[in-house]
Amino acid sequence: MTPQVVFVHGIRTSATMWRAQVEHLTAAGVGAIAVDLPGHGRRMSETFTLDGAFETIDTAVRDAAARGPVLLVAHSMGGLVAIEYMGREEPPPVDAFIAAGCTSIPRGAGLAIYRALARGFDRLPRRGQPLADLVLDRTLPPETRADFGAGGYAYDTQDIALRSLSVLDLVVALQRISVPMWFVNGQWDQLRLNERLFTKLKPEAELIVVPRTSHLVTAMRPRVFNAIVDLALATMARDRPTSG
Figure (cartoon, rainbow, N blue to C red):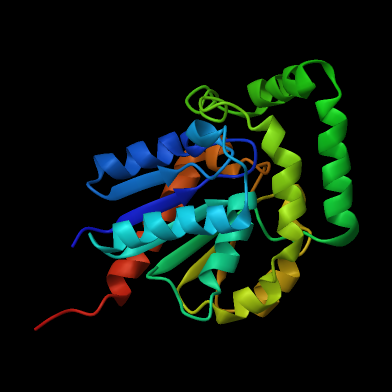
């Protein structure tokens, strides 16, 4: 059976953020699918809910599992949701897990500040997109620069999604995850806030911090991130039982 990789995007962006990874895996003969969560990308008209996000991930995972062992890769908000999904009492059919840019507990003052900043950007001309474009132009390489916005930006979903994250119990979820796991952060990632707690709760997981890289590690260092995905796939192949 052929390994399968399911990608889950972060807040405001869409499945298009994973273009470099999907192309890399497709060229290697590995199955790859990037989903759009409710309220994002091709599903912009829908309302974001956690239940809808869990259902989206679960549907993609179970469909992929019918074709081969599954690696789940998720970023930022998608990573937080995926941690909760992976920590269910009945484990989903996932063989390995990469959680990128999401080592932060989305509660309390930190979440409140993040929401306030997002609402502040919404009040700027064009909801702050010119400033965001300037940052992306200066930090992302040409090969991935267009990927974050190719599916549109989910402005109207952002606060709804952020507010919903406060009910996640990541402390419990992390301790239930039993498959090989990697935390991947950029050196300058603002969501490294609880990195030590996450690695303490999941000591067998590997922490990879990419130097001179922002929160957008998947697009800022696409070749490095592709290599991490390859590492996870190699680990899955090593650990897979052989017949005969």
